[in-house]
Length: 215
Ligand code: SF4
Ligand code: SF4
Image (cartoon, rainbow, N blue to C red):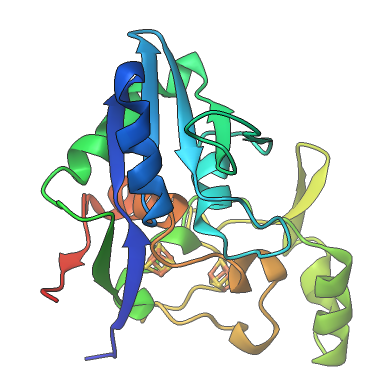
């Protein structure tokens, strides 16, 4: 057995526009939310995004919608909070997030996660390599990791090539990373319990939720 980590993550709630003040209260207490203006128009409401923090769960909540931009509200009940429009194709996704978290009455919740028992985010992914990664590979005596056949081009970027079963080539059978000490930034900054983490677990392992921890 490996050690699980207890993490605190935002509870995701859904509101109608007329309840935007309750939404603001939930988000100020650490939650994440979607506000539906109509059945077809919605926006995310998140705590102020810290663009310098790669572990900011609000930012990862935006990334999970395929977006990278947000607005800081300057007036009204949401003043100071971050918002971003939900793409039409993601409306069902955000509804599912709210259903998933509906059993939680608080704004944040605890989860127990064990990456070694999971490994979901090391499968069917696109690990984009950054300049620092090449330097780290060279410092560890493995400069070949930054070149084919370990890499390929995807969408104009250099990414790690996957094995035939769509797992990362560096993922071992016990879910350990074979190059852990020199793993790319994209891997070391991927935050547990982010929407992207939960999405990977659901897609790859069919786990819709983490293990609830009573506080
Ligand atoms: S999906 Fe989440 S819990 Fe699973 S290995 Fe990745 S970070 Fe860890
Ligand atoms: S390099 Fe390691 S941490 Fe990154 S995806 Fe591959 S196995 Fe996972």
